[in-house]
Length: 454
Ligand SMILES: [Zn+2]
Image (cartoon, rainbow, N blue to C red; front, side, top):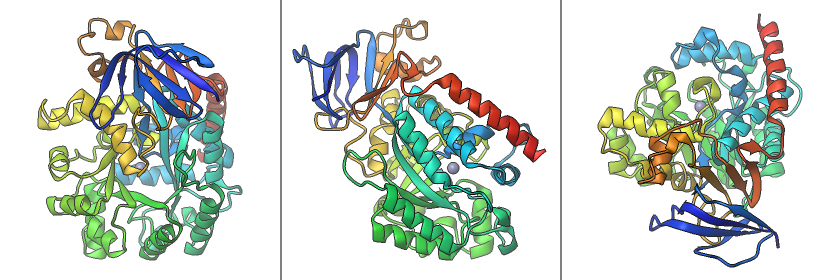
């Protein structure tokens, strides 16, 4: 049996039910699971990692992303735009997506996620330009397999084009029949519901302004029939709220509820504009929210009413969102941003550094209904990160090194990431791929996209 012994870690923040933090402790991995935590574990192992000066945490769980967008970061024309104009500009670029661009965009995003401590990521892929050959979501799944992250991709869709009153151009739409057929294919090909699965699938029409009511209804029906989760954007901006009131004469949540989009198998990206009554409904029905504070700041979408979420016990996780609106896939950075945004809005006592770390780990596990990830407990998945705090950025912070991970800050690159019992980042470098090769491919594709768009 393959084993890794992590020896003498400065701290192991287990994120267990008792919030136990072990000092100068060991952790043993056998195959793809954690088999023991404790002190002076005498076990022999195939590999021993000296964790002196390092903090061990469960790997972060990213609950919302659009990996392909990493090749559209920092576009000058939309650096200072809100959601709708930002999207309408990007649609022109996304017409030129190729399978290769999707694959390389995913390699960039997943590479950055792994290096910054994320061991499970979701993805929401929804752009299928007419005439593009190749199975685009399959390219993303291959990229995740290549780099070794635990993956929860969702098959997104756009069916409501401009000619029908939607926001996207018609050439980015697919018919309901095409979408449902491919959704079923993706589920049958890739969805593995087993506890230590490396790939689970969800379904995700893009948003109320780009998916028809019929598609929303038939998607959730297919998801429930095949027992997968559903995801979409909701209550992200006031523009979207006005669009729903004007077009459907209902607020966004009421509109989706009428389409059967409520319940514990549903999670919404953003959800920052829900009112009190809606938050109570979400909590009661266990409908979840993927909270993306950097993206909300970047697009000026607003600030989530975090005190209300806490009071009403809304289930939420953290997400980086697509890299065109963040513009990074840095989960560790997102944890710090989450803490700072809500302290700025609601005061310094609203959230502790430990709570912020927990939202990126345990909360993600609850959101995805995946109890095997998100905590360092014997029997759970060996998904964890080691962070070396023997750096100038942490010097002088040894009073509370776990809090230092959030309150201090350097480049947020972890020392080691382990996914499913395999070391996928070592000494701050990806082990399965060359970062310079990925960066070279990304530059080449960005250059050719620029030529095609201009
Ligand atoms: Zn998004």
